[in-house]
Amino acid sequence: MAKPTTPRPSRAKAKAQSPASADHNRPRPETPSDYKATKEELLEFYRQMVLIRRFEEKAGQLYGLGLIGGFCHLYIGQEAVAVGIQSALQPGKDSVITGYRDHGHMLAYGIDPNVIMAELTGREAGISRGKGGSMHMFSVEHKFFGGHGIVGAQVSLGAGLGFAHKYNGDGGVCVAYFGDGAANQGQVYESFNMAELWKLPIIFVIENNQYAMGTSVNRSSAEDQLYRRGESFRIPGIQVNGMDVLAVRGATEEALKWVQGGNGPILLEMKTYRYRGHSMSDPAKYRSREEVQAMRDKSDPIEGVKKYLADAGVSEDELKKIDQDIRKVVSEAADFAETSPEPDMAELYTDVLVEQY
Image (tube, rainbow, N blue to C red; front, side):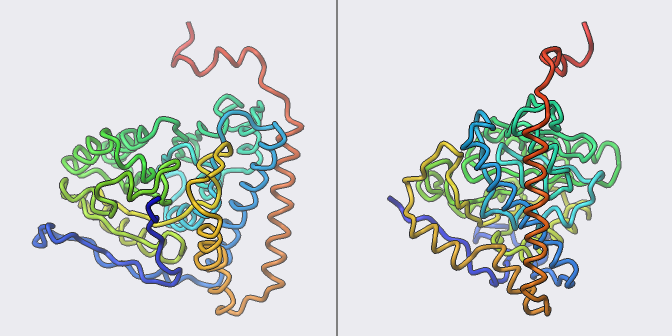
């Protein structure tokens, strides 16, 4: 089995890298540096990342109890990516679209944990009225456009969202997330081509968690430095330590400057790692327990923020209080989901067609 590439140490600087074949006469984004967060911002990053971690752990428990059906893909280990990127966005203005591993992105965009958990359990109170489940959540109000089960399909839709932002002149930017496996899909490159031709305000984010389902990236991708994938379309790429929320936020700031400056799309490759299997039904036998434990020990995104907080003078007791509060929020979300009624049978006929017939 090929050895997977590993993210850089958590305090490593993110570097804007360009392949030797790139045209260096073209303008390129600045090399990003780690975001200089205030103590309050660090605490909020910590709170959001712990919320995602605890929420996903609870979702895993409910799945084991049979309260969540279908597929369920957990975001444990990747929390710094969604939190770092979306903390730089403007909710209600900038749009977000992702694949089926979507719970963390919704929480990072401030969506109520109660309605997310209710959706996971297929209840009427869920954000998609219980019909979307884990993989197909949606919120027009928050400009969160899914939650998509077809690998790579969200990238083309994201290009459409970027086109809408430009057409409407609303100043918004679309962030389209996809994984290292989806990076090999054809529609991704069609979308790259159109996005660059039309200079669309879109940030393409590859969440490279090292495994496309059960295949390591260097066994499935001829070019495993995925930040280079946009170069043939003149889309610059930046490779980022996706296990460090400050590196992620810093790279996002540079990406936003690039896109909002009218330069067209940019690609961010987030080198990250998932601790659980591809989905709850995946025993993850394609990698060793030692590999996973080594990532937890050396590069855990939450532990990384705790070190920054300690440097900022935040005590362990303060962090324990945040953790206790988050556990209560997640427990209440689970109770809300378990006690909410299932959708009425009439819901089978809604949201199928735009108009009523």
